[in-house]
Image 1 (cartoon, each protein chain N blue to C red):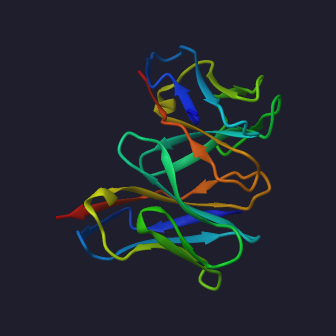
Image 2: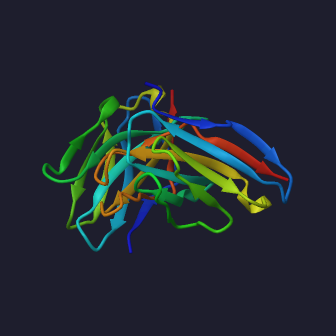
Length: 112
Length: 113
């Protein structure tokens, strides 16, 4: 049981490039989340999903898109990366709306 | 709107001393409250959570927290700090409708020998 995994672990992009971050969970959780962590700001919610095929905006959604085509996967896309998107990205999942969220190890993204 | 305030971005204690990390929250509905710990270059790990029931919550690694509604607080304590407790600690609130977590800005705990 791997829990929540994220790929890649590290990535460096140039401004304007695109990429997709993959989050996978093997716990059959309905709810999945993408957060970004910046120094002195804690974690902020980007997008979330309450089930396969559904997504919703969080606190800081601009510049990101997501998809949840399969229950176990939640993809975060950057269509045109900007330096302001340099951050550490964390994925999390929970079994239902009252349950503990389990976090992945994070993806460190640098946009030059 | 919900929010979380963690007083003190950096806290330093001596090994064996009391650890007290402060968290105050704002919520218009009964909150669910959480403390997470993050060790360097790792993801977040749940320490403890309060949903309903007993207001004193015990977590892993000897930590506990008390929900005080009148003070809108959920401070984290540990009687005796250990070197391995050095990490960043995040308080978070959720009202449960979508389980979205609102995090505080974190407190970096240093433990001096």
